[in-house]
Amino acid sequence: MKFELPVYREPDFTREPMASSPDAEFRPVETVGTAPEGYHGTTIFPEYVKVKGQWRLLKESRMDCAVVLRDDDELEVVEFRRLKAGDKVLVGREEDGSRGILVHVDGFRTSDTIREPFAFRTGRSRETSFSKDYDFLYELLRYERDHGYIVWVLGPAVVFDSDSRNGFVSLIEKGYVDAVLAGNAMATHDLEAAIYRTALGQDIYSQVPIAKGHYHHIDVINRARKYKSLRDFVEGENIDTGIVQACIRKDIPLVLAGSIRDDGPLPDVIADAYEAQDRMRDQTRKATTLICLATQLHTIASGNMTPSYIVHEGRVRPVFIFTVDISEFVVNKLQDRGSLSVISIVTNIQDFVVHLRNNV
Image (tube, rainbow, N blue to C red; front, side, top):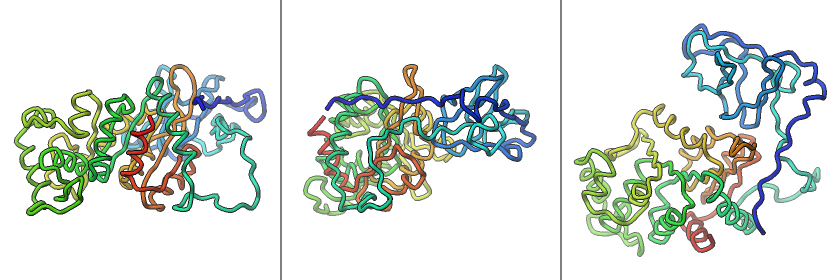
């Protein structure tokens, strides 16, 4: 089955209430970082705003932000912390088109699925069969390699096993990775595996703890901090295995967001939370597919800044979001956002990566 993008259906603006709707209202920011009362908060869905009689699609969106009308009449989705005095912010809570704001939730919906008022097994759990999801993902990745931008969000479990670590490197080599978002831990244990063949002191193949192995990750961080950057560290120590070196060698963006629990951290880990968010959003705003593996913290963060659509190569298309974890709570967390685009898979992360490597 060859993958084909779903066709986006634009709203019919000749119908009421859109046809007779007034232009949307904008009010100026009076206090820096604070939206005016009654501001409109963005969603994950395509949204249209009526400006000078024309319905305009928000081209780059993200959830829970404000919409600013620039002097050239361009609309920009802006985090509240970025609002400046005098910015003209969209106001209005009616989202049905009657007041110049339309949230379009049905753009990618099809009528293929029969929806019964009562049905069993509609959730995603360890009892779910994910075969069709894997098949869909294989075809999607082949399509996205040539036409899209694939962003991966990685927890450290990806590098705890030699097969999954090597498997992800293989995905990088084959062109299925355009950016990686992670934290200090993933990079640390990947580099630990390169130097000591351990992760958190366990052999990455046999899973057997190594004597004094609990020092290894701290030793790696301490050693790396003698260098100005991870690139300098990888080159200076002749590291030639693992995800970090593969990203550096292939010039793939590797955004490492720090947290309060980090050891060290490694060079290039971004300690400022909002700078890290900005750097992550630089990648998620380009994403056509987002795949989150075994990390609750970074999955929620990345998912919250990724809309369900993007204007890519001149067309409106969906952004496909996958969340993969052994925990049902974690994989269902993004679905609680109300996103139709999230596909959750409950599985061991090492098995998941190996399946991908073997099938794409």
